[in-house]
Amino acid sequence: MARQILMPLFLASLAANLVAALLDPSWWAIPALLAGWYAADLASGLVHMYMDYRPTPAGKGLDALYFYPGSRESEHYKTLWRERMAKVGPLDRLVYDFKNHHPRPDALGRRDLWRLIGSTVILAALPLSVALNVLAFTGLVPGWAAAGGVALLVGGAFAQYFHGSLHRVHNPWIVVAMRRVGLLMTPAAHQLHHDTLQRDFATNCGWSNPLVNRIFRVGRRRGWFDDAGLEPTA
Image (cartoon, rainbow, N blue to C red; front, side, top):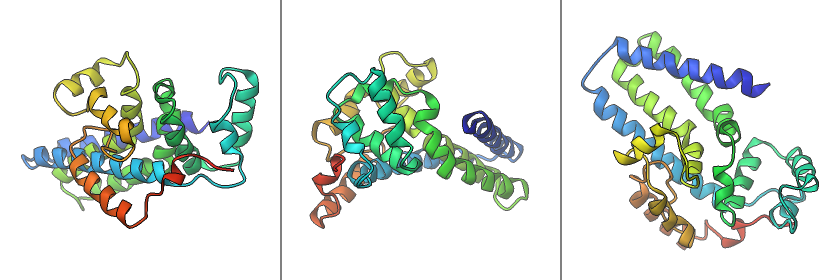
């Protein structure tokens, strides 16, 4: 039910923000779009870094899913997955997906769109987009700021979808085209993250990775990112 209501609502809100930007054209929209895309990439890196190292909730049995020894296509696993996921909220489901993704990277590429972005839309993208609707159509923000907001919202809301596309052989033409012009990163660039799990956390275009890497190194020295958080525990 949430998918049928919230996804169309988010897309309509996003379209309204784009209309607001077009109704008040400005050359400032170009740097605003680039800044919004950079900010979305930075957010993808910071969120990815946090999710990778945030411990999963204790006592919910997520470790049994993570270390499941049998086929993940079996009915037993699917039943167990539904049972365990019902015990946690949208944020912890997303945290689990980040951790599960490391030993099974191709699994992320098989997720459907709502599974990848639903939590982000519910928790952040939709409320922020509606807030921007109000600000844009009451004249409290100019059109160029609305344009930057649209870039930020698209990059932020679809960050996990873009992440999944890095682990998928066949992608829509728009993803391929955005990679060619540098608006999305390549699978080879993202592999640098999987090689160590300690660098290049941004998954949109990767423009912010130099900054995110510095933040990670500082946090690592201060003990913020403990390797124990990389896997669910009992």
